[in-house]
Image (cartoon, rainbow, N blue to C red; front, side):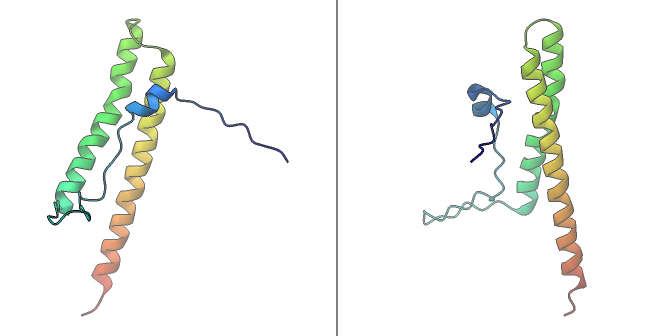
Length: 107
């Protein structure tokens, strides 16, 4: 049986620094009080996180030019930024598709 070798592009310390996106709206099912954010707030928070992730490669590249950052860190920041933009584009497309379907519903 052949095993595919996995290539780790990120060091373990890099994986810990990748911010996770919380799309749950901060709904806590384990407590009596539910901390619910509006859709607008969730999307706004997500856009702030996306902005931070997409600005990081530029900052890392400037640091690399000054000799303060490793080129591997810059490349991982660029890859993370690309994945974040792709995910945001996909999510936006799905939201628009859902909105269009809802608008087609006849009451």
